[in-house]
Length: 126
Image (tube, rainbow, N blue to C red):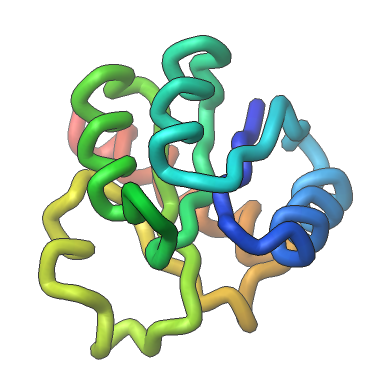
């Protein structure tokens, strides 16, 4: 699975790259530092999966997710942030993201499980 990592913090982008590289079957195709950059990169690269931070300026991850899922529906977006799931912004729930993962829980096993859950959902809905 090709993966694009989107986060305004370079240390997290580096950490996420390591997670992707350590997860069998996943490969990095790029990273972006903003929502706007992510929208452009998804249009150009058409990755299978986007790991999207929520809090970024000038375009946050929620708006970027809306635009990406509308423009390239085959691309799966997973939101990553430090919010507790119960404290997510209300619009995070209906922006088109396939899942939410807390950054502290993000690792190879979680990445593989989120993708497996997505594939299972596709199998039961279509």
